[in-house]
Amino acid sequence: MISTIVVPLIVLGVLIVVHEFGHFIVAKWCGVGVVKFSVGFGPAIWKRRIGETIYQVSLIPLGGFVRMLGDMPDMITGEQATDQQVREEDDEEEAEGFHVEEEWSEADRAFFEDRSRWFLEKGLWARSAIVAAGPFFNFFLAIALIFLSVAIYGEEYVEQEPTIGTVMQGSPAEGGGLLTDDLVQTIDGEVITDWKMLATTIRNGSGAEITLGVVRGGEKMDIKVVPEAKQLRKPSGEYETVHMIGIGPNYGTREVGMMRALEVGALWTWRATDRTVVGLWGLLTGQVSPKELAGPLFILGEANRQAKKGLQDLLSFMAVLSVSLAVLNLLPIPVLDGGHLLFFLIEALAGPISVRKRELAQQVGMVLLLCLMVFAIHNDIFRDSADLQPKVEWDSQKQKEKPAEEPKQEASPDSNGSEEGGS
Image 1: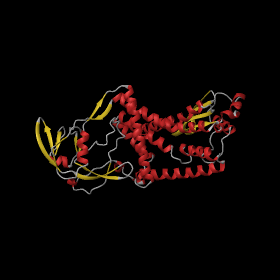
Image 2: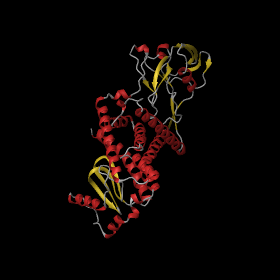
Image 3: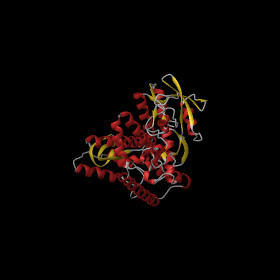
Image 4: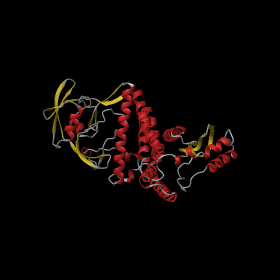
């Protein structure tokens, strides 16, 4: 029971801490004074002051923040937090039993009043770098997680030999008599050299009966199969018609060096980012149903399910979440990092934006995010998690035909990036 709560909190905590650490370290590098770095929101349960910065762990672990000198306006009120307000917050926490090691000294006051270290006094490029650092550190985290997975468990790949690895229950392949470990040598007399050729030939065929020349236990035989047309949905929400018989390839795992593991992590993150952007665009254009939008309850439950499968699955799931968090934070919505970057772009083109306009934009952005959150939680509560899983139903099963999703690749760092995984 405890692990059911702890594992998801650790997953979310790591993602958020890395995101906020990105803002923190780049702010320090750009010479901006950092007053507070908090893991979590709400009352502090532990805090320590090191140099000019207070580091704390707060009661509510679903978040975190970095407070900088001369920071951006408050996301709710649009007002600038002053050094006096920061000191008053710490005075209130001291009254509750949390004490900063030192009282605010003359050096502290000079620190707060040094406008050269204020965020808003920095140049446009420095401010943009600080804001963009959070999402980009999430991209780096995804690379690191896949790198770690590959370094520990090896690189997964699709074997090139056209040997059948799986046969789906109720599929034409099963009905035709195909078995696991059958080696497909020909289709209608055409020589098949590798798995990709086998999958492409079946998928792009006419749907008419085909004859597969296979080798089983050293014996050659011909097996006739009739492919079925399936509507596969791409990440964008668009559909394409392909033909399938219900077979999958053999997957292998190989040990690789550190540089190759890093390359796999970078390629995986690039592809995952592309799929996330395409899927998000499909959601915005109506090609993907908003009912598929998942919220925090789904994420918490899925984190537990992946953890039960093993560390490799959990690392991949965390990488998917990290990429999603990065992409979502770069959306040009006020309150999000992308919204602040949009403000900076407008400032570069048209001059500074008034505090009042920022305040209105922040409030609109906050309302929008709250509405999306409520809708996502509603989906989490009333949706069967099985609805998010890819489905392929066969005519031979005499069930109502349903569109099937394109098989997802996020869960495993396949170095080939193959979309010909099943046919």
